[in-house]
Length: 218
Ligand code: DC
Image 1: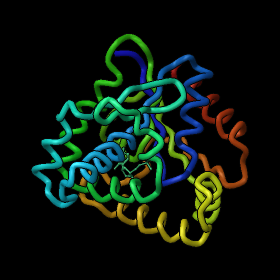
Image 2 (image 1 turned 60 degrees about the horizontal axis):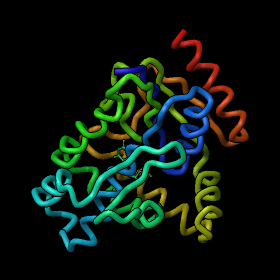
Image 3 (image 1 turned 30 degrees about the vertical axis):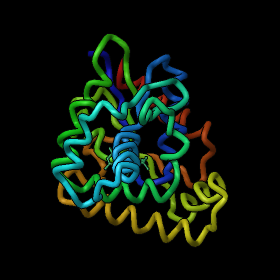
């Protein structure tokens, strides 16, 4: 197993952009663990599986009808051999993902696949909600990214061409669900380097994170 750096934070805090850029600078691979929950929710909806049916959801996690592929620009999801990565990026899929992610059975079933991303000699940047606390508690460096709710909503609304206030409401609901669930809630890992990106450019955030990570892995 190579080195692992974790980046956690709430919805639209910039985790994916920062992780992708950091991984590129370090020459590491990266994974968005949110893609596992989004993929599962998307596939369940397409197979008409009830999002409250925990047993069926847990079984679906191991169904070869869908799979995840780590690529340098995105964590891709394939369903029936089709690339559905664009489809899972919608906010409603994010919300369904948040709903299925609160079942302990689902989290447990996806955990091994997420940990497998670190297997092999290549180092890994992993981003999500519980990467530093649960998935990779022994990570070499842990980062927690945050930003004001208005800033996060503005960022995602402009990416998806949606209304700012609607996005703020949707994110508020998702943050609440992700922070209040019993198992592996969104929380700041004890030894994490916390970065508030509200007033910073992407480059400034990545510079700070890279500086911290290099200090931890040297
Ligand atoms: O990061 P994201 O928006 O792609 O994540 C979608 C949902 O998946 C998020 O609202 C909660 C869930 N999730 C999780 O519970 N644990 C993770 N490590 C990553 C995502």
